[in-house]
Image 1 (cartoon, rainbow, N blue to C red):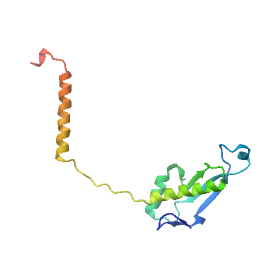
Image 2 (spheres, rainbow, N blue to C red):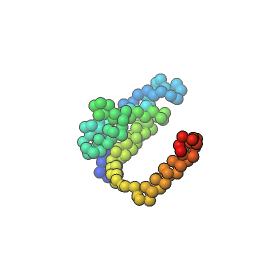
Image 3 (tube, rainbow, N blue to C red):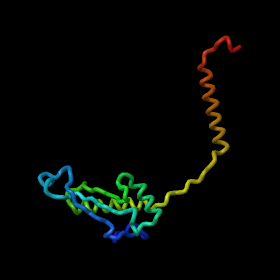
Image 4 (cartoon, rainbow, N blue to C red):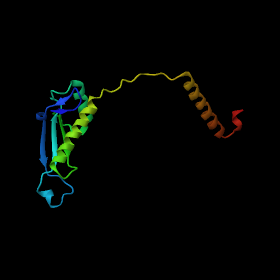
Length: 141
């Protein structure tokens, strides 16, 4: 079991890890050893997530999620399989924790009387500046 929050726990069977060859530094090992990790998590059908968390997770994942609702995280920062595996799981945990946070509801506010007066005073001042820039013509009289 992977504990994400006190309420949310994910069974390790829901996560599929594939080890693939990584690009980047690694010397002669790069063509021999599959150190990069590709984590797959079926977010759409995960029983451990509530509907609200699931929808926020799918929205947060963006391009990392397939049309079938499978979240794919690739970890290839480190040179060892174990560190990349830990990195992929930590990134999944962070993403689910962020999705578990309920967004704050926006409280509509109205501008205060003083702020309205300040806005109108600024507009009058700007209008005065622009009026002073105009050329004086005889036809205005």
